[in-house]
Image (cartoon, rainbow, N blue to C red):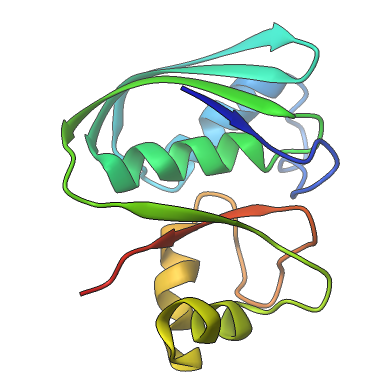
Length: 143
């Protein structure tokens, strides 16, 4: 499946990381995202290819969002097998003036549910107050 992202959005890698594929893999695995046998490849012209097996849809989507919200990445081609697929997720592109509370209010009717969105995007978000226009966020369903 192919996902589109804003090429200029997102956080840079930690200092010392120079290879995009390795940096993305490091970011995904560093946040303990459960994607087994993860392979990250640069396909050229801002496209990243992800391969592996995820415990569930949420873990696969965390990896996709972490890869896509990297400066220079415009597309993520995901070939991630999912063991368990019950969850449906919405993807949301951050606009100027957005906050996680505002997005939570819009999607859940409760601004205080912003930690759900933050947790769903932890591979790429390090602080709930640091979101940028153009970033794509996972908005998981809550019951």
